[in-house]
Every structure is written in structure tokens, then in C-alpha cells.
Amino acid sequence: MRADSRFVKQEKPFWANVRTMSQALGYTDKKTRQIRVYTLREMLSAMDMVELGKSHLVDEHGIPTPLARLLEDYFAYRADVLNHYVQPRLMNVKDAAQTFEALKASFPSIVLTVPMNKQKGDKKAPAYLTGMVNLLIEAYSGGLPCDTDPRKLTSVTKDGAPLRTFARRVDGCFPSCINPVAVWEIKEYYYTTTFGSRVADGVYETLLDGLEIEELREHEGIDIQHLLIVDAYKTWWEDGRSYLCRIVDMLNMGYVDEVLFGREVLERMPAIVQEWVAIARNRL
Image (cartoon, rainbow, N blue to C red; front, side):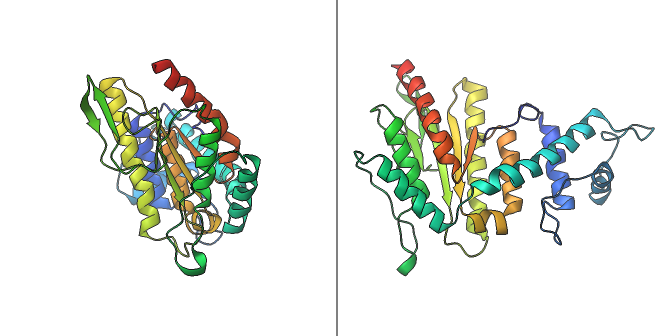
């Protein structure tokens, strides 16, 4: 899923309002467990709750400002895209296992190394989402290399010297972690029973990566494509819908170029990888 063109170029104050209102009003309704779409009255109430002004939302006659109308549109969009696009694509562990095996059977000539998850006992199994991503990259990369298990920091160089080195190790770099075309994070939590701090931290880690990529783009004119790939129906939908809202916010703020939810890796990875290949070959 990519950002909506109506919102992706909004300035930072727009997102300050989105976060402030979401914090004050809550991302989901606790009774219905539905993602909230705030009315103008609720948005004004949110400003009262945090003791901030309202003149940016309504004029002296109580008429909504263009910003208020755009915020209404955004909250409606956020709920709609999560309810009707994201939810149907999220998989449980059985779905993920079947999807991975079917995909692997479609590419029998590929020798694929799939990492194991970090579970123990009868829950120990291949990391299905990572396996799907790795398989599709290998299938569509045109023979170019790819680091699907980086054990080092990502660096961008100039004249052979480090220009930027990112704070975190990412889950994958194409074609390598030195001057990559693209980097990605994979968050698959099929066996997680609650939405704990480790899962939440994964969202904020991706935000940090996005901030560093934004700084590189703005100050050096160098762009790296940044993907977030997530799955696990219970973890993200039943327990973590507020964090799905944050992910949609992060996507439209421009800190991630695309987020792939569950089965969406099958729909989008081939075209994404082919785009990376074109960029990489153009650099040669």
C-alpha cells in the first residue's frame, strides 16, 4: 500500500494535529473496537482536552477551515483503508504457512534459505513472511545480489568515504548495505499472544529509519526506498489496531515509501523488485 496523494505532501503541522487528536480521542472505540472517524465537534473537543487553540479548525463564525475539512477526510480515509484494504490481507500462521509453501512450489528452481522464527518447541518454524519476501526478491531480481540477512549497518558513501551510516541494522538491503537502492523491515508476529512493547518498538524503529532516510534525501539529494512489511492477524488487527493507524500515519508522512500487509507481498513485491533492478542497473 502506498500513501494517498491527498495527504502525502502535507506539512508537519497537519500531522501534529493528527497525532494530537488521535492521542486525545483514542484510535479505536473501546466499546465497538472500531477505528474511530472523528467529527468536527470531536476534533474541537480534542483541542479543549489538551488545552490548545481551535482557531486553526474553525473561524470566528464557527465555519470549518480547509485544514479541518482535510483532517476529516484523512480520518475517514485511515479507517476505510484499514477496514477494507488491510484487514482482508492479514494472515494467521496457518494461512501464512500455506501461502509460503504454495509460493515456494511456484519457483522450484530457486534454492532458498529461509530463517527460522525465534520461537521454541512446537512453535518453532520457518519465518514464513520473510521466506516469501526473500523468494520473490530472488525470483525477480534478474540475478543481481541482495542482502537478505544484513549483519551490519547501512552506509551511504561519497568518494569512497562514509557519508551517512544509519543507527540500526535493517532486515534487508538491495543490492547491498553499502549505497542500497532499497531497505526494508519485516514484522511478522504469528505466535505473539499480546501486543507488547517489543511489537510497538518495531513501529518506532521503522520511524527512526524513515527519519534518517528523510534527512539524507533533504540534505544530500540521495533517495533510498524504504519498505515496511508486516503480518499476523491477531497481533496487528485484534490487538494492535492503534498501531496500524500509526503505520498509516507514518506512510502518509513519507517516512515509509510503501507498507505491505500480509498477502500484499504476493501482489506487490514482483513489481517493486523490478523497479529496484531498473534503478540499480541505471547506476552501473
